[in-house]
Length: 82
Image: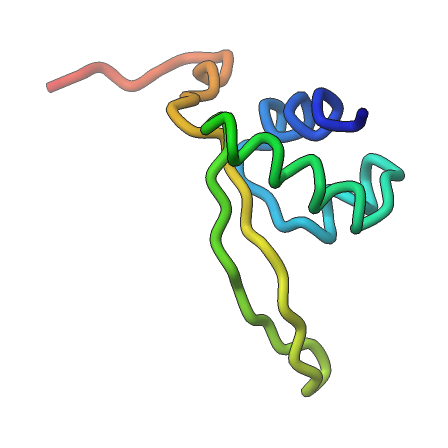
């Protein structure tokens, strides 16, 4: 149900943590996890487990990114290749 919304968010942002995806899209964390499982089964997204410490408290999460996706180059002047 929310799979496409999560996929679109990752296309815009590149790599992101599951909690931030849930916060910024307004989708519950459980629904984000279910969407990520579906996307991982179809090999559209890669995830890995991460552990962070915030204010001395251990937090488990998932780092997510789109498989094989290279975001478009940023607009503006580029340096010349040597």
